[in-house]
Image (cartoon, rainbow, N blue to C red; front, side):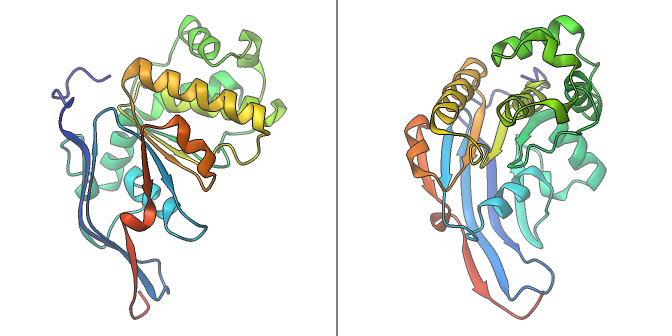
Length: 235
């Protein structure tokens, strides 16, 4: 964890206040009156397709910014930062595992992971650090030299986690990562993910439509309890 940040053990690491967002040409505006997430919480966020789960994650990661309201992360006015400062803050403090993993197919596993450190402004992890990270994810050391496109879906998934964790982020956002896995691989992935979060007291927001996965998380939240869609004029 970043030692320069204040002790956040009992405070909210994520705060949303009076947030509204609308996609261009959409007639529906997403509104969030107030939502807070405490340090170390592991939240299972569920909802039907189209209910706003991924949009909410994109707001929390700074990929999208609200038209109104504020998003505060780790006591920083995250949504008010310039795009470049927001990108750097995300790289340093927020790990994101996308549904499609978003690995760069022609780069090796080592290069994909080191790229995340580069964007955060950190020194690239040495080979020993990479091997330790890969080993923690139950991957063989030789996978580091393979190109992402050579990996199985399960291996890509774990590399995506390694990339998200290399900067030791305080917050981890995970979007439907188990949709392409069978039951055994899914359960192994969830156990591994939770173990890693517990080891570093990482705040986790895990998005899925598969409600059976909620047993792995400490809190269960419906996206409908956080946000509402209101019909408005096209944005």
